[in-house]
Amino acid sequence: MSQTNRLLGYPADARLLVVNADDFGMHPAINEAIIGALEVGLVRSTTLMIPCPAASHAMDYLREHPNIAFGVHLTAIRDTVHEVFGPLTTTDKVPSLVDETGYFYPFDSMAELFARGRLDELETEFRAQIEAVLAEGLAPTHLDWHSLRINRKPEITDVMFGLAREYGLALRVMGRA
Image (cartoon, rainbow, N blue to C red; front, side, top):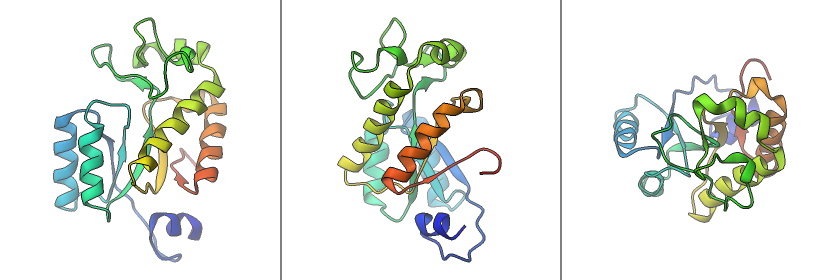
């Protein structure tokens, strides 16, 4: 526990309940709700979806409030067909992660993503998302993932563990780690 506490900025012996607001950067309305929850103390951290339309606004807020713990919400899937966002890397570098429109697969096509998606391309995209946050001068505390049912494909967890270790970040896990 002490390393996780240190990575999150707490004493080694602290007992933590971290209430986190996912999807920061997805849409302006989500940003507004998360900022409000952060400012009144309802949540203590958030996770940033860097490929999404309102990510620059979210990053501006985090830059202005460097005391807010935040993670990179690794993103490789959209919630619905109506959302339009895709990889930070060019689609020719990660073709297995995008549908015929050039955007990430929608949630209801996750089986297709799992069937087609290549782990090396997923790592390339996740690395690009982390690097984009770092290039903005921001300091994330952890990694987690957006809507991927990673229990169906444990190799994805291995990729995320490797990235967390490489970048010195905590990683949200499901169940006991």
